[in-house]
Image (cartoon, rainbow, N blue to C red; front, side, top):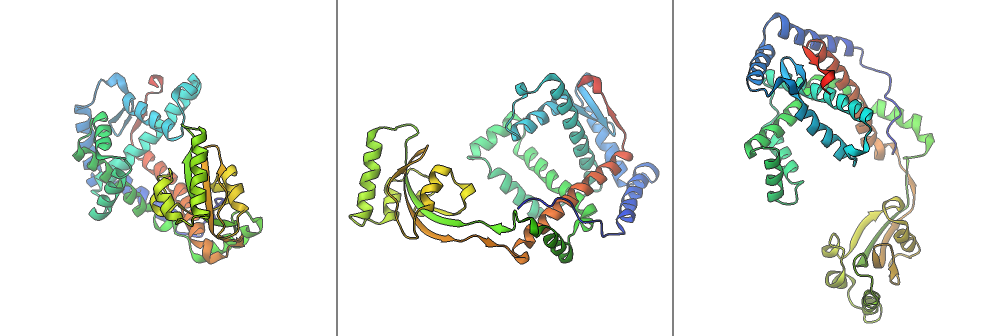
Length: 353
């Protein structure tokens, strides 16, 4: 479903007052009362300045905490990598613009880190531990995780502390904008009614569930591959061999091999055209002849299919609420950044970018 084209008009008349309270709390703590946030930032910036590298490498100072060229270089590479791009693809002007954008994001990150630490804000330990487990599970092996950490000169303790910071900072932001981004059932329902006539995203397309046996031709495309798939097909259709057993014995799709070849539910836009066209022609229970796609040979059995259907509000409600909430969070976070910047001391050395 497409994201909502825009949030509803603000229905929280106390939002302005809410942000005034946040603003004056921050301003009072930082400049008038020498509160815990100011004390923590003072200690943090003193430590940062004492241990800072060559000042000629500083690209910005946030409450006297430097952001270095190396930090921007790393953040830039991560930004490009996450979008499948390479720095060599950028013109000099575009690279400079992107460096400035990345630097602004780092300034925001440092501000959030300073204020969340200054307030001694800590998320529940269980939530932090769950996030650490989730993050570390993204690496294929523990050795890869440790290798990547060593490249960044991070010990396990450093890594866990950095991940805890991420959770703490997110929860600190949530604690300041949480109520302002809540979406009521009435607002979600109103958005549904206003947008349902557009059609797109309000219909569940035709869905199929199938299982397959796959023989790759990416590396080896010789005639023995065709002979192999034909022999498997004969065992299933003539000799009545069990389909799942044949999958386990022969299929080269490692993701589905131990699942009996089950591809689970899918729609047309989830599968390559050369595969989907063949599946769509099958009746439920029918086993296809071997057919060739760009990556190899397949034998497919259609297990079940469901027709296209209109989705009602109750089905779409969680997604509508999540998208409206995400929009509001984005807007409120931008407002919070502005508030933090207004009470911060920030100096940017644009000539060094």
